Length: 66
Image (cartoon, rainbow, N blue to C red; front, top):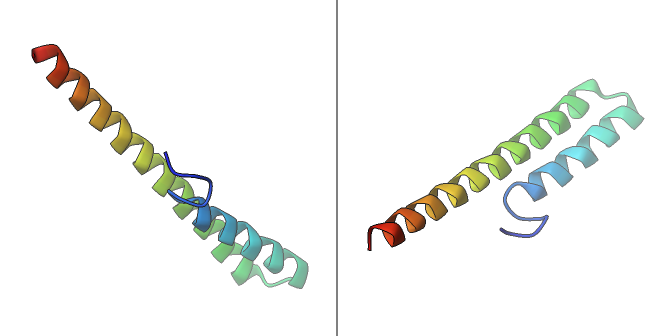
């Protein structure tokens, strides 16, 4: 699996920064954008994990059939 900055990690970090800026400045819109970016990053991470598990299951199935 990729490092923290890959597979959604960058979106999560960007989102957290936006959320904090929004909180500090009182800009609710920026805060919500940050929360959305974090959710997008988590979705990418989950999708990548599911893809990896599917590929592993496929490899295992092929190996068992041989």
